[in-house]
Amino acid sequence: MLVIENLSHMFRNGGEDTVVLQNINFRVEKNEIVALLGSSGSGKSTLLNLMAGLMKPTSGSILIDNRAIEKMSENELAEFRRSHIGFIFQSYELIPHLTVRENVELPLVFQGVRDKARREQALALLEQVGLGQKTEMFVSQLSGGQQQRVSIARSLITNPSVVFADEPTGNLDTKTEKEIIDLLLDLNKTLGMTFVIVTHEHEVAKRTKRIIQLRDGVLVEDEDWGGENE
Image (tube, rainbow, N blue to C red):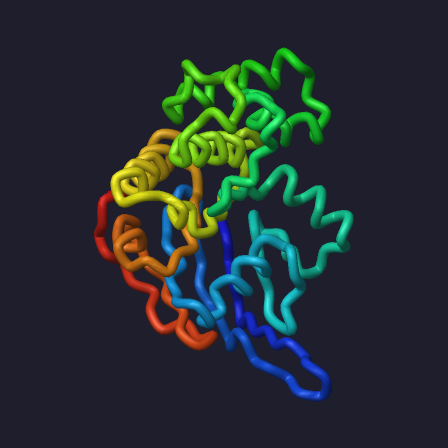
C-alpha cells in the first residue's frame, strides 16, 4: 500500500522558492493499477522521484507498506528500494553486454541470492512476459517492445511492494504500446502486483482502472474509470 499525505515540495533557486507540488493526498491500495497523469510541468516527475525515495519532500509523508520513507537515511532508502520498489523506465535502462536473463537477475545479485535461485526466478518471469525463447540473447538483439518486456521482468524479480512505470510506452509505436499496457494489466491480475503508471498520454491512462491527475502541482482528479482492470 502507498499512502501520500499532505505532500508538498519546493525548489530553491537563489533566494526564490518555486512550489512544485501543493498538498497532495491519495492512496494506492495493494494490487491496484493506477495512472498518474500529467503534462510536462505538472509536477508528476517530481512526485515520482519523491514516491521512489530519490528525493526528500519539503513537507508531508510518503508511506509504503506503512513505512515512512521520508524519514529514512540514504542507506536505509537504498536498501528499501532494492527490496520494496520496482522501476520500469521509458528508455529501458538495460545493460547491453549482459544477456536478457542476466539483466533480469541483476537486482537479485545485489541481494546476494544464489545463482540457481536467481536463474530459476528470472526464467519464470521471462516466460511470463513472453520472452521464454530469448533468455540467452543480448538485449541489443531485441526490439524496443521486447526490451521493455525485459525491463518489466527485471522490475518484478524482487517481488516489490509497488512498481513505478515511468512513461513505459514513450518510445514505442501504437501497436507495441497496447501490447505493453496489456501485459501490465495481465501481470497486475495474475501476480497481484501494484503498479503506478506515470504518463502524459490520456489513452494510456484510460487503460487503467483509476487516474490520479496532476495539473500545476495540484491534484485535480482522482477518478475511478471502472476500466479494463476490474
